[in-house]
Image (cartoon, rainbow, N blue to C red; front, side, top):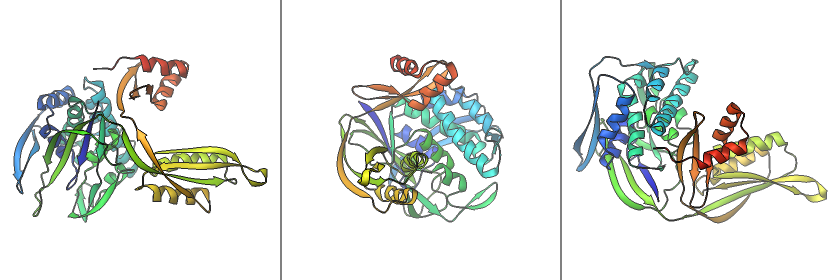
Length: 382
């Protein structure tokens, strides 16, 4: 079976809200504390308290701090996260922190390794990032789904002054995420939460059919006048195939270069296509051409189609409704020659993530086919 976590950001999402919701759903607090302790962070304590808000009981994560370091360099936080003994937790936490560093570095014109984090450089960020990943690991969650993130309006006050909501760093980290407007003012999604969703590879498509096991409510620090400020997680086992109605979009092209076609495939995936591919064909008058295809959900089909028109210059796109059966799958991470390699597992086959295997082949000089075989045969890491 494949353990699934579905995140419902009722009023938004912050790192501490997600951490509290996971503990509320059954993640052992001691496992979370142990992972944070591995980082070498000093002067902190993490507790989770029960809170009643607007008739709903949930959990709130509280980080108590006894030292006065409120900001750190990104490189320091990343190095601390990399000390976590569980390599899966360490690698995912490092990926989230690197995403924050890269975005902040780009926004401020600095090297990501040298960028200084202000609001994000304190204890809370490291505790939240490492804690969330450790909680998911302890719950044996293999797949994370997230419903549309509510985006607030107005402004947020930062170390750089008053900025529009969502803050520029959050906006950059949410690229590719599913969002929706809300009547709530201020910051509803934090950069830490956005970076975690990216590092976890959160899926924003409708959650698969699953057998419900637990629900957790994470309460935020802000008090709202008319509703509980909570994020909800639902845990379950996905034991059946996922049958979903999808859309195939395609167009014939005979005047587009190979370079543009290759660029188009990547752009369609960025726009939300589940898959994209090209078929060579012979068109009228014997002209060689290509059929550009994209597989999309009904929700993303319009955006994928818009991009097809804009990037290819075509004058027409065909749509066909299809039904796809997807078998349950899980992912894990192993290490080969000291390098991190992700793997996908289905009921009948396992395979390495292509880009990770290529990186190992290039660094070691081993044939790619041998690296792929070695990764497939490696036992699951604890």
